[in-house]
Length: 562
Image 1 (tube, rainbow, N blue to C red):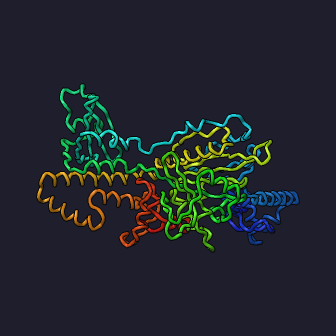
Image 2 (image 1 turned 60 degrees about the horizontal axis):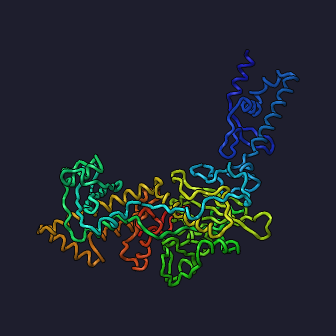
Image 3 (image 1 turned 180 degrees about the vertical axis):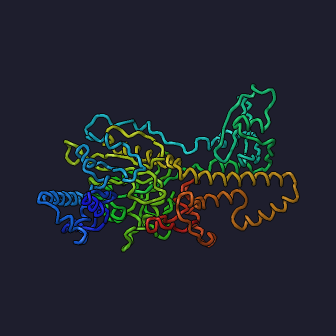
């Protein structure tokens, strides 16, 4: 009994112990795993204790106990060796790299947060000889970012109609438009709120008399609590209202294009590529035409067309009435001694969707490109067709952050294209739909809500003040005159100026996106050409045009705001 007490006392002492080259501490850490303390660790403390403390234990031990002790030591040595065999990181486990005998195009992030289409478990047979290649390109539908944005332009501007404004205690500013379609005996109504715009069509036969503005607003939204609306009598109100409704509608898009060589896993390696293989050049020709930036007059997507500061060439195309500019990494300026290649990342890192072309079998990691704005990647790999010398096909996969809703067109099964025109139709449709779907992600939707709220508040105030001026309010007329004079010196005044300002600085909500905010000087000191280029993108929560380089030292600080 006394001997057991002495042993327990010795077990409670913690010391380090070294087994040759196997380590020098009891707690061994490998990756995220830490070996817990155990009874075997306490035996190490006994061996490391001073001779005076361990002598009673050793002197009283028998040969059998010595044998057991050495067996324990041998086991401990074996476990230490096993601990140093670190588990391979999750994204590169061998079972993921050998699906279907080929490497997958995309591997999931170790931290999660992304979905992949098609899932890894479906990549069993990716043979390009399969007979089923998916949907007909004619069925590829392009999504609309705001399906009701053009209703006012289509049904109200060409007809006699009325507009009204109010400020609801809970809903905030409201702008209501009412149109009587006499030929169809219908009332068409649009109610604009901070969250959204509500549209409804009512038959006039349902009402004994034409309903009031308050009644129509409550028919669209029962949360409306105002008792009256103010009539809009400003002559240019339709122009202001139409500008607000269509602030998210634009035919222009910009996407990044990354070139990934075989064996490249990191962001630095991918962004440092300068050479373009013949296969990559052929793929770029599928996307669009290589154009000279000097003097380019189409949509430039933030690229410099005057001084050559963003390279001399780019890839541009028109697609179903939309202009698309591609930020090709290999065509953007390369900076010696800069492993992060910020001159390239300032454009691609501010895109919302990027396309990755793989020249080899190396998978693309979902989160390898550090960016607050990039939410989706389309990955394309060129593969050889079986049985045909020199023939090639393109395998496609998609990954996006988990809060990005799925979007079409659906990938064929297997996800392989052999026809260049069909590949082009699919990729361009998929890229456009991807960006529109990314706007529904949490970060962009919050920023969009703030932008819309600011614009609607400015619109309501502008319509109210201008209408009161039209009614002859002398106090407001003086204010309007001074505002107009100041606005004329700055280019324009009122809602239009506020609208432009909101579009240019919509990326000021850095706290919403988790980006540190950097305070800079006034934009009035910038050249006109630079300011015009920064607001060239479609109005809406696309921070790419109004924000320059976002990632300095892995996005430690963004570039200047506009």
